[in-house]
Length: 453
Image 1 (tube, rainbow, N blue to C red):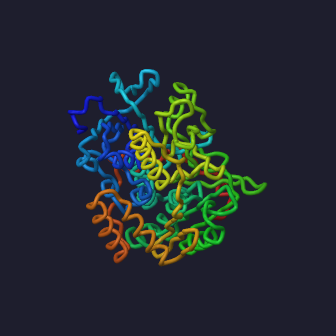
Image 2 (image 1 turned 90 degrees about the horizontal axis):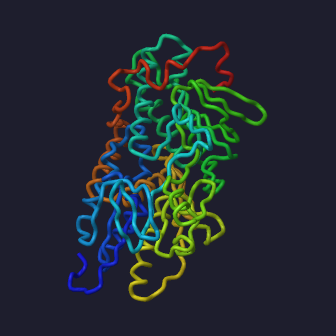
Image 3 (image 1 turned 60 degrees about the vertical axis):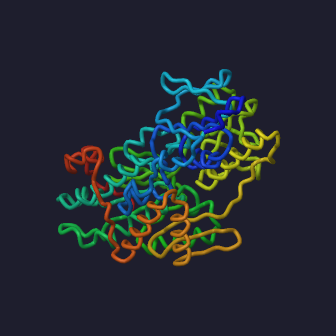
């Protein structure tokens, strides 16, 4: 703890959110002369970049999660509280967690983002997103239940709907999901069923822009799309979803409106800031963008409140090149570490230049031996990009046991093409596949499948 002989009360830093931004801020303050309180509604840090591997049965949730108390156990100036902050009082310098009020001298808000349906929130019932462990388990349940239901289904149209997997959004998450599901259907599960041929499954990726992986260089987008198609994924670009209801996805491709019957629709198309953005706007007068992200100053503070900082996916930082920084782990990590350094500099009566993000590159996994890596000065594809992707993700896992377990699991999967976490758990799992994925909504209709897929 901070030296008790110091006559001045210790500087209180409260961090809301234990994701990359909040956790790396706390770790960077481990030896500072401050007292840190980290608050999160979960007791663990989640390595979100590998959530899709939980959703597709490669890894278990514990493989990519680390208990916050264990990670920060050696930070003697830090305490962890399990709870949800629902309000902030900037005048009293307190955060409100239920009936408890926690004082702060400096506040760091890092509550992240969730998936966005662009105003069509009713689509979430039919197309879950992928931001939390629960999301990944729900996706896993739907994916593997679809194969089980198809095995039992006698009606060809219904069986085809069960074996149609539709992913909305061609960013890294959508590309990785599509590739992983294709490998499941066409390789991992091909000998596991007796009444169906899993190689007849259709994996369809819809992207509104003219190419997948829009943040990447165009040549890498082309490589990614070709690799997906080699795996058997049907990639449809310049395609906008207009409705999702009752196991029917309606989309517009050019001037043509089409429909696809699919009982497994997965959402990877957009994000919106956590509700804490609205709270900050109401309490501090902060401005938010259309996605609900808080527009921050060059030092990541809120205008008019230089002791309140917003980092990670909740922050809209556009001071570097006029465009907001992407909502990726490296951005959150660097922002958290920057604010921690700034706090210590202020205690010493010093200043720090404006935050500057260093972009070390972008990566996306497509399938076994297939990935794309854009490091700016060099672009990789194929096997070496895939190997680089593996090394980087293992490196950034928080705890050593996670690194070890994931390395062993990946090595075993590579040798056997098996996925050992193919568990159907969660909602309705105990009841089998009778009512899963709103199957009662599906009504066969003549010429329902109006597009060849």
